[in-house]
Every structure is written in structure tokens, then in C-alpha cells.
Length: 277
Image 1 (spheres, rainbow, N blue to C red):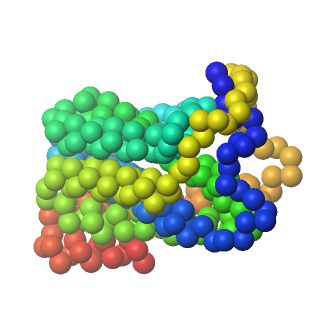
Image 2 (cartoon, rainbow, N blue to C red):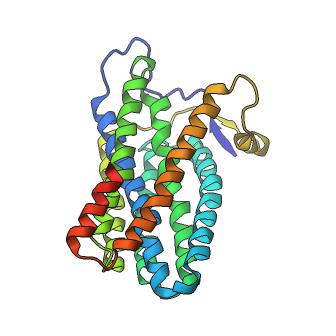
């Protein structure tokens, strides 16, 4: 396999002081799309649908879906990152993957909505996670590819805001579909697709056909699975903090959604606001 050596086509330049506002907007819209679809389903709609199909085994099945998603996402994220590094095209190394996987992930969500048994749901969910990470990895890589160092912190903030919108805003939307889960899943398929395409359009990545290439070994790819062991205090502090935050969210929100699923619409709206708070 081959990949870039020093990314000679990067727009990054210490002398370039212009703030990349369009790329910032692309990296705000993008994560709002893919993360909104993921969280809207994983925290609210998917547990609800599993409970309808197999209420007796709902808890175990939700855990199974989460485990499968975590496993395939970890692998797919690294693989798609490497594949996009190696890509040479008129539209750059990241854009083809963002557009292609936005389309594919939307298709898998539609098929998930149409699934009538747990096995098919699990397969479609796993395939969606794989395709979705084909959007995530190339998208976030644009920060190091194209943003001058002096603006990387600011652009990372755009990405963080987009993630917050997707993470918490999706609960408000998903709660409106608790009595019509299939429609909710299809809505989020369109949400992820449209925002993924808009993100790619705003990013307007230049061609990299002439970029230098070099070989990447399997050993180098596998090294991405290693955890840091030296001078990594900040890394583990951030990891633990994020883990506790996400664990709290995913413990509370599905149960809250379950409690209000058969309540009046005003109660469902209120529960979605509690998630934001």
C-alpha cells in the first residue's frame, strides 16, 4: 500500500495568516451530521426499536449492538484514515471518502429502518458504523492537512461545536420520533447525507494528483492501536473525563426515553431538553 510522505499539497503554511472560515464551517457542519445520526439512533431510536421487536431481551441486545459498534468503529476509523492518506484524486484525498461514505451510510440507515428482525438490524447497524467512520476519519484529518498551525486550535473549536450540536441536539430530534421510529431513522439518514455533502462542498479540497507517495506497512497501521505509556498524563485525564461524560449520557438518556415513550408529546419534548441540560 502507498500513502503520502510529507503531504506536499497541503495548504498549511506558517506564513499563511488568513483564517480558513469555509473549512471551519465545513468542520462544524460535518460532525453535526454524522454524530447526530449516530447518537440519535444509539441513545434513543435503536433501543426503542429493539424493545418493540424483542422486549424480553432488550437490555442484552442493546449491549450487543453497542459492543459491535465499538469494535467495528475502532477498526474502520484507522483503516479509512490510512486509505484516505493514500488517495490521489482531482478532489483531494479526503473528499471522495467523505462523499462516498455519506451516501453509503445513508443507504444502510434506510435498510436499518426497514429491517424487521434483530439479526438484520445488527448487520445494518454494523455496516452503518463502518461507513460512518469512513466519513469521520477523513473529515477530522483535514485539520492537520489544511489548517495553518496558528489556526488549528480555533478550527478544532468549530469541530467541537459541531460535535456538541450532533451529540445533544440529536436527542431533541430523536425524541419526536419515539412513536414512529422507522421515520426517525430515515430522517437521520437524510440528515447525515445532506450535512456530509454540504461539509465536503464547503471544504472545497484541492486536487492532490501530483502528491508524492510512499509505502505504508501493516506494522505502521497496527501501531495506531497502541496506547501511550510515556508522558501521557493529559491523554489519560482527557480519556477518563470523556468516558465518564459519555457513560453518564448513555446510561440516562435511553432509560429516560423508555420512561416517556408512551407519555404525552409535551413530556417527550421535556425529556429531550433534560438531555441538553
